[in-house]
Length: 414
Image 1 (tube, rainbow, N blue to C red):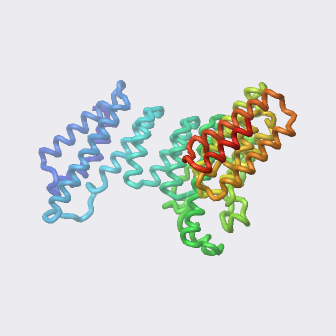
Image 2: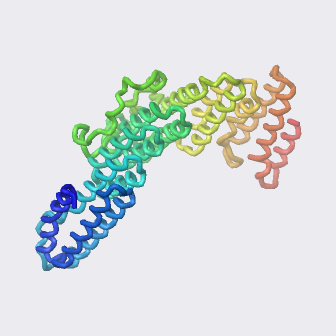
């Protein structure tokens, strides 16, 4: 047996003695535990060891701890329940085991994910921060790891500012990945929706009420920055490239109302969108290829916005459509999107449906009459516009006066 393995095993002797002293395990069982740990240590210290060996060791320790807890609860009335080394030794041992594992196999995501899962289950915030710091330093191009860190900061720690900073730093390494931009915008939409719903539900009108609500529901990590092992410090802000520095300041004020604060209308989201499409299409020289990329990004973001009905979706989508018109105003897809925008969130049952439909048709007729577009483009717009009305309204309308009226309107457009 190597000196290192012997040393690690000797560290568990006080714990095993305590288990025997509390009569949770017999002397024979303690001997068997030591024998199993010796076998595992030989396996993981050997040259041919694999991540699976560490995971097998971890599963054994986890099962052993479950057995200890069951026996402790069953024998509680008759044993010494004063806290002692065996109460916390298992968790410390598992953390140490994972530290050794990821140091030896830093590319094994299976080890990292199990390490994080165990730390989360036991609420070990310091360990979680440490693991994310190491993992993101080793694998900065792994988008899933960044998104996992963001999810933890936002959902568990309620630290919105830190989650935003993580997204910004993720883009430092993965700015060419569509998924990161989509998730960033989805995060901002989700956060803004929750904030506005909370204020509406509790009637938070004054800035003092809103400030108290933010203090209660955000930035409530369990440790201060100097205690948490801040996972965000390994990529200094000055290392960000120029386009990433165009992103707005992340400590934005969320006080006020939609009428007085542009951030609450979604302007931060629109700024992220503008930078996204600029960065991802700036190096494309072929016009058609650039349009397809621009359209894919823009329409995907519109579809994400569609899901957040508590926000002013019309305002958000109007900005995106205007940007598309500025860049590709003669493209049939863009024209149809512009002509149908005011109908996008109106159903047949909406009070404003008739007015919205009339406005849309007037815009369509005006464009057809005044546009200098080619005949082929006009024909494509006509077909797509009529197909939109058929699919969204005529085909789903119940038999009656409204369906007959719509049928007549659509015939006039042909």
